[in-house]
Length: 207
Image (cartoon, rainbow, N blue to C red; front, side, top):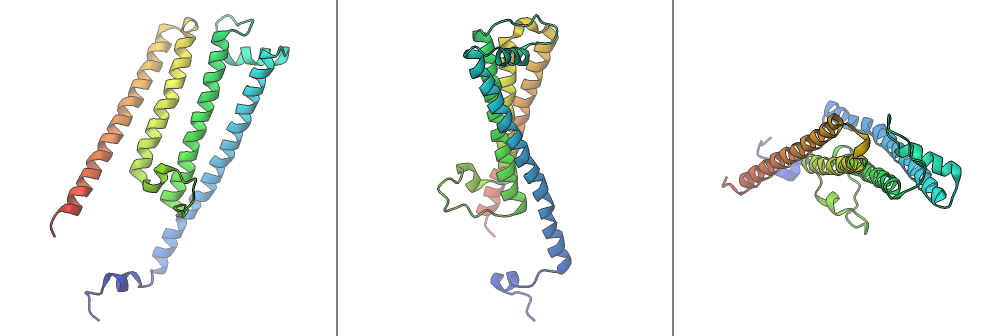
C-alpha cells in the first residue's frame, strides 16, 4: 500500500479506539460548564436583589435602606445612616461589578465549550459574538485577562471612592494587585502576538 496517500484518503482512515476514547473524555468538562451556568443564575438573582433594595431604599423602604447601608459599609468604619451620592455610587458600581463578572462567565462558558469540548456551529446565527468567530485558547486567555482587569478596576474605584474608611496599606495593596493584573495581561498579549507572528512566518515560508 503506498505511503503517499492523498490528504483526503488519510483523513478518511478510522480512528484508533483508544484515541477515540481519549478524545471523547473532553465531554467530562461539560458538567463544569453547566456548573458555571448555575453560578450565572446566582449572579442574576444577586443583581436583582441588590437592584430591588436600591429602588426600595430610594422609595423610602427602611428594610431595603438598612440592607443597602450594610452592604456598602466598611468593617471598623462608622456606618452610614442615610442614602447619599457616595452610597448610591458604591451600590451601582457593585451592580456593574456583577455584570462584568457575568460577562466573564459567558466568555468562559461559551468560549471554553467552543474551544475545548465541541463546535457550536453558530456561524449563521445573527447573535453570534464577534470574538467567537476567531476564538482559540490564546485569544480566550487574553480576553479573560482583559475582563479581570476591568473587574479589578471596578473594585479599585470602589475602594478609592470610600478611601477615608481604608488604611494606606490596604490602598497600596489593592493598587499593587491591580498593577500586577495589568502587567500579566500585557505579558499574555505579548506572548500571543509572538505566537501569532511565528505562525504567520511559518505559513509564509517556502517549503
